[in-house]
Image (cartoon, rainbow, N blue to C red; front, side, top):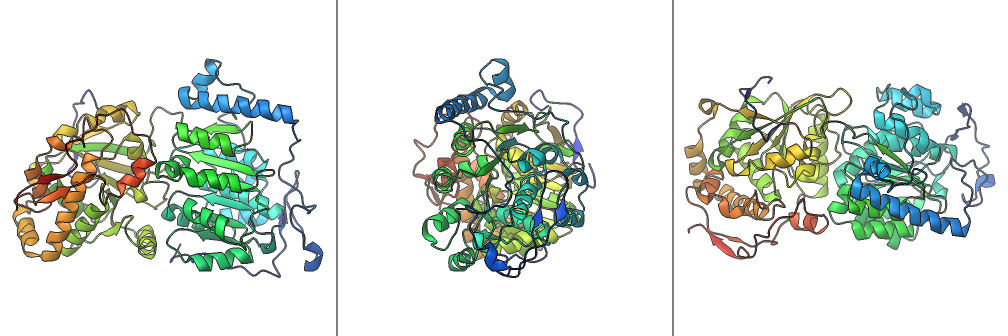
Length: 602
């Protein structure tokens, strides 16, 4: 391994196999917009506008503008049969997988179609895109399409509904934004026509990232674009929506709020709905919001694009209510491993009292690298950020309890950095495209293999991306490797020579004992760590009763475990997530005798 003392063990275990911050909405003038680009079937050409704005003051319900999709209306009886067939087919997909469902006759090929893996153009220049879009793509230094782009963009531009399954880092943001922008341009959307495309994202950070890509892609287009997310100024968003925003990137809660309460929000002309990271949206508890959003938005001429890294029963339910009958299913996840090829993955077995010492030593040796470190709770991130910065090992921190402006500033600061360390919770684990990350360190193991895959997806992104991943495991947690192997995650064991670990335990304990603020922060982190551990979905492996609390306390700088109340469900950011997701595997409950347990001495 590069520039590190970590060495791969030869023996194998059986179980191992944008400059600045964008504003809330991008301002575009409501009048004197440049001419829109039309998209004929045969050849792309530029057409000028008439210049007489009054002649065009019609809604898109009355407009004679060309439409991307032209579907014949089905008879009422046929609709019922198709919806019934689609429901059964998607249920078969969720239960057996697409290919197996087809093989067993559970899925009818007529209702869900599959493009060939090598079908379609390979370069963006082959797509017959508008000049303005091609200029933007060339400015972004993209030439060859990824597989999801190659297989997804042509049918999306033809108006098909798509259910896409792709690994993180596969390039799906451009796969849905390019057809959306081309459609808005071809239909000559103007601010007075309201919103034509809505992109729904699970997190504020991912929404900001999609917004940044949309801003680059639409730089030469006349259509307006914007972002509505929780934590931003709602009144300012409502004012911009009333002026007309053609393409919106949004988080579910704030979008539903505007749909229900912003009177000037024109969404009756909606042409496309994009649901990105659908599994994550449902996991974090937005199932009800998504059902209401899909119900509110007009569906007669609406194209829907649903992307999900994992296929679950809840994703199938959302697909059934949002997609039209006969969606195109695109799966680019049919490989031997669930993680990308350019990612070298390993784990290190370490006792709990040595965990922080090992992390400190690793970060000291990797100060020239770009690293993301994952923790299990907000308080753990807060404590370790304060501690590491205090002892002159600078880090950035990102977690769900921060104000939105702080989260946004931190995200873009780390994106623009050439080197440095970001410590965070899983808020940064899905979909975010942070450039040139060298290492992913999972200081606290993830809740299940799905979370592992999304965490390591922050590095080795793109078709030729390279990166490395390191997961910390305690001896009692080795069983987690079996679950990763079953999820097709290739791991090898790394070892860190004990004589290379900085022994700063005495200094750490002295610092925590003398510094009131760090002491209080350490107690909060210690309590949150135990709470998160007790709520782990794989309780047979991550059993809080088997933890050596003296050793755990030492990793937080305490000689004696502090006296804390372990109250499951209290002040736990993970609880909201738990309510909205299906637990990984069937595990015994371990909180029956642990509801209010006093731990440690005085």
